[in-house]
View 1 (cartoon, rainbow, N blue to C red):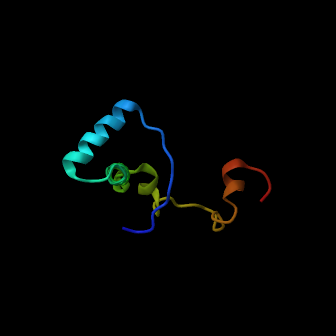
View 2: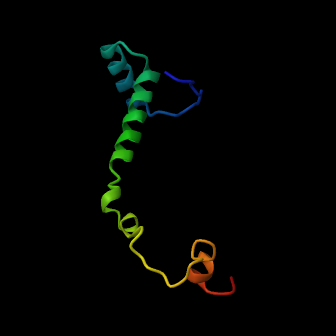
Length: 83
């Protein structure tokens, strides 16, 4: 386990009661259960991104521009005005 950051959170009474029961069954600290839940949430969110089917990602390298300085003057080309 890496460096831990101390924080304070508010948990509903019912959630705390259930956490205490689960911690007792698993023989773990409540803080460890919370860390595991956070880890699971973050892993699930990260895995749910399908970069291969993301419409923006699929356009990379496929758009042909008539200008050669789009990366420098992108605001000008997107929003108009002087670059």
